[in-house]
Image (cartoon, rainbow, N blue to C red; front, side, top):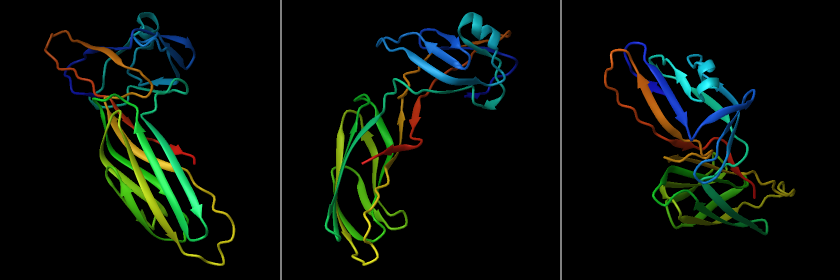
Length: 230
């Protein structure tokens, strides 16, 4: 959260409909409009949050410090809406060739888009070169990463894109054991999307002098360790 307010203003933040403590370190939000109940685990608040008022009023009340700070942190393990579905196919054609096909489908809203999408497909160390066909973005072989790296600058919601690659391998006597495939990795950020479904319902500012304020909320979902086994 970024806050640049003078004096000692009292802020109230509402999430979805209402939230309440189910047990220590766990919050359960009431169903959203879609009927989905959101359960948050391991919730921690910044020291500026008034926990007593949170328990009684079911809102996050706090007197913010100046500048940028982390107001709340939580973990979610159920009911996650993943922004992408990935369908990989890797075929080893003898000891000197591979066929790689990856389809990525965005499942967030059609009016949204993801930025800086990167798909990294690991290949064997003895890869010599690769040729590509993509429906969106650009792809190349990165020898340093031992990966095919596919980059899409802007990926619209409710669409799909594919990458196909012919990989040529160097045949060596030392490479007799089968190749263990590492997971495919993705990088991205999706503005105005939340994987947990948690939403800010309101943000209110109270200050004795009654000066005017401007409040705004921005959602960004970024990939952490986003891996796909194949």
